[in-house]
Amino acid sequence: MKNYIGTKIIKARAMNLGDYNEHRGWNIQENENPDDPGQLVGYPDAHGNFDGELEGGCHYISWSPADVFDASYKPMTSMPFGLAIEAMKAGYKVARAGWN
Image (cartoon, rainbow, N blue to C red; front, top):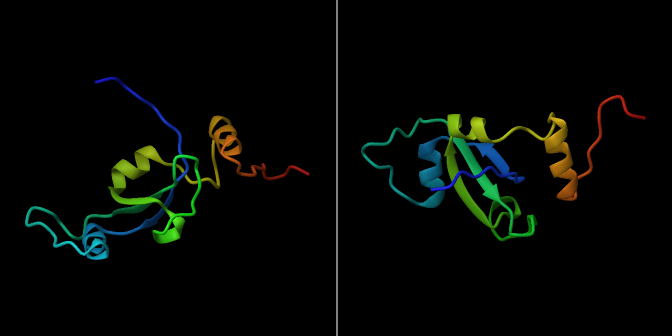
């Protein structure tokens, strides 16, 4: 397999594994801990648009364990310069605190 690195803007909210299974209408598996922390993750369409029929306008949702999520995503409220550029490319307005 090849290595990849990507940048995408997602929507997410805290949700443990048990609540995610309930959200999807699934039964929790015997080997899973329903109290495992994580995030309900919503993805945009291929053009970066959040106008789908799922929660928050997302086109696809999934659940991510907290440690995997934290290693992959950073809040848009505080980001390094490179991620700010990616956010602008995606059509978001970016400003630095203290800019006039």
